[in-house]
Length: 137
Image 1 (spheres, helix red, strand yellow):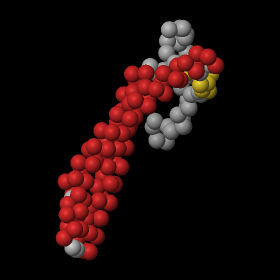
Image 2: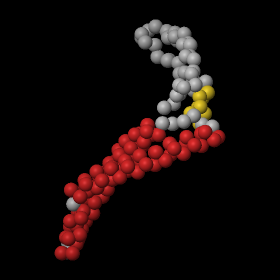
Image 3: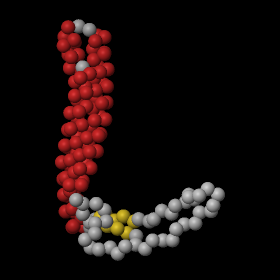
Image 4: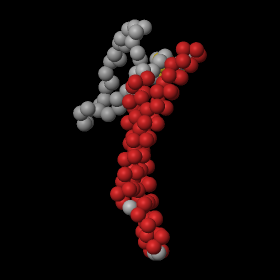
């Protein structure tokens, strides 16, 4: 079976890009927070009055603020870039055709009852495709 991805709904792309961007931003933000906490420890070991003022920037609270700020930033950037990608994909798919995907059903190989041989179920008839049906949302 060959299917062609004719167009994408921009709002669905934006939602997925927003969520994945937010999760990745939060993970990167936690990484930044850990690095900032380690830098503060190094600055405290070095000592000095000027360095103590600088080490206030690397506090744990600021690091966790950065985690949430980067999550929000990555989510917004992901949503905007997802909207732009979806819009461009729809234009280019209209001009040159969409992405073609070949799909095959995967047979179940595990017997539902131990000790009995597996017999595959009969093939299901595929439903008729209508032009309005969206195969990949």
